[in-house]
View 1 (cartoon, rainbow, N blue to C red):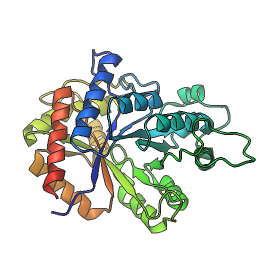
View 2: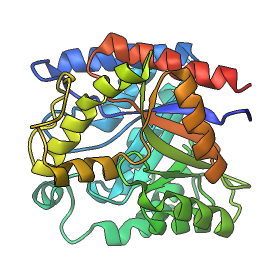
View 3: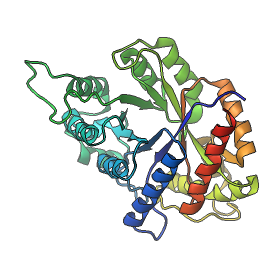
Length: 332
């Protein structure tokens, strides 16, 4: 068994049905602290808006909260949806975070709005959006880089912090842009697995070294349900099935308790759509996960794996991290 890449986590701060946002965020802190104790590399939070059941909309605020409750794990955005924000505001926010938690902050950027069109219009300046993503990325790089004597607009804090910028994507577009700009790249295999091999290949084949990065660095996000047995994992996975089904139906995305069977909860077409969404999902005990990870890593070259773990019970979710960490320890 080859040595595994680093492991990281993506967090949506998903609200369990009936829980408060406060309770949810307390659970997220405990989850991040457990990940840090186990040696996970990063803990990223995703920006979503107008979605009942997801509480990570104020992404930079939560990054600061998690970073303040941990000591060494890198904390960042997976990602900030740049069409929603002026680059200057993001540079100031992340420059402040980097000043508070030096060497621990990542700025992952996406070009989707992370919400519906009506909410996107409520978030962003009129007339601007995803089509301006390359220019906005370049502007952020400039704002977070060294100050120039004639620079009219400065990010204070922000200038000179050189917070690492990552590009995130689920298609070939961001892979090509990350390669051209010499930036690290993360593919969203946890919800859009179809193009992961092609996108990662395009990124590596076209990478141009930059001041930030001298060789390509790629991360793949995958969903996982680690458990003490495959039977338990299949049971726990019904929580994620119910959430994704709600997403497809335009319903609130509360985390619901697992069920013995999904029969009667979805039809054949919905089941197929959920399974396509989760095509890269790994589940089972450490032996099952080792086998599935070996199969995945035999087919694609990645430097890091970022896991999303939708498990209803917070203690079981932390236990899942123990099992996942075991797979990496066994690969050394």
